[in-house]
Image (cartoon, rainbow, N blue to C red; front, side):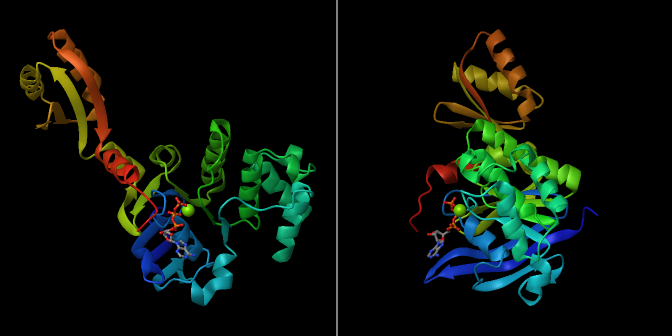
Length: 307
Ligand SMILES: Nc1ncnc2c1ncn2[C@@H]1O[C@H](COP(=O)(O)OP(=O)(O)OP(=O)(O)O)[C@@H](O)[C@H]1O
Ligand SMILES: [Mg+2]
């Protein structure tokens, strides 16, 4: 059922006064994927997620979840979705279990076993009877994901779930997401402003910038094929250029100032380096760059929140 689309937006837009935070956004999230929603600060990720969870009303366009229009089937549709917007807020003086009990009771309540199960899933079962105030930031974030998992959702939507975590916490949350997807077949939609994070966690992705979609597709297809470039600073430059042009895997060379930009598969970068060094050239730098990575770095470098 890989062609099954679980979430679709059509020309989705949100305007705050005269400024569009999100505009003409067409997203398609296939069922079973971990879908990474990547964009720099202020790109419109949280605004989109708020619309998807029906916390903010779109100014235009439509949202379809499970093949149904969100606003006309809101209750039914949202009962199948779990969400985590910003870091979750819990009662610090209550235990994790009590917090989840209270949240579950809003939706009609869940059995102790159902709560045990989500606590187990996020690895908090052994600490379930501890007060939330004794939790680390990473544990609170996992409790936030546990909250999103109450009621057995088919889709969970997480807004930057690893923000503010240390490397160990990030690793835990990433592993949890992968596990939910693999073992539970839950579709995960998660936002991030880090390409590396999406690359490590997601199977499909979209990039949003200034409220507009830049690209979407499978992570592997977008990042590992297509226009890849190795930037080389080697001396003498002319000699390097000549040698490089003779390699059969090289598709093209451009010179920009004192750097050669070689269009080639990145897995030949090491071989190219060895060849240049063996030929007696001095290689000052050799940087493999995927075009999407370059693009993303360029929009994040210059990004500000003022528009
Ligand atoms: N309630 C609001 N009123 C006015 N403008 C808003 C509101 N919420 C968001 N915006 C604007 O919409 C744009 C997108 O914001 P959004 O929070 O969706 O970005 P983001 O991609 O989540 O950024 P970040 O990575 O910083 O979380 C920004 O210019 C922001 O100032
Ligand atoms: Mg945000």
